[in-house]
Image (cartoon, rainbow, N blue to C red; front, side, top):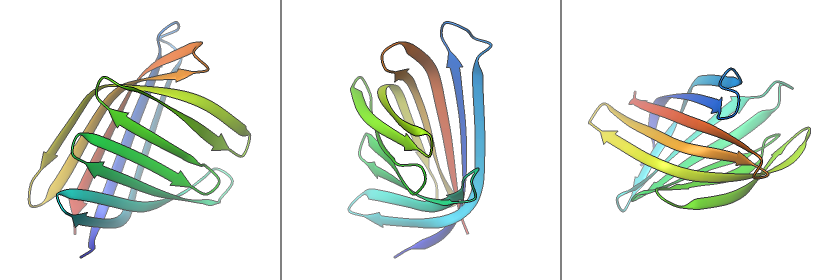
Length: 141
């Protein structure tokens, strides 16, 4: 059964070579929460700079988290502690190959909310590395 949620996603990336090169982002929107066999799925839409819609799906299966984006942004980022996963990240400006090295995943659940904290290194073409964090908070409505 799908439940209505309010989802807040906060991200921060700090360039290892130039700590002043820092990017932050935050999205707060409504979405849906589904659970099945101890796995859960969070779906929501975002409006991009060009006013197009991106469909977002976060899959949580045990200690593995997958973030899938489809629309003007397309990617399939996989987070598994201690592993490097490579993905293509496609925007309206082109496609980048990204390496995602997950350092830590922390998931907290209650009857009112779920929080997911991801701590990882984001590599661009193996030349630039960003220490990155994502905090996802799901509040059940």
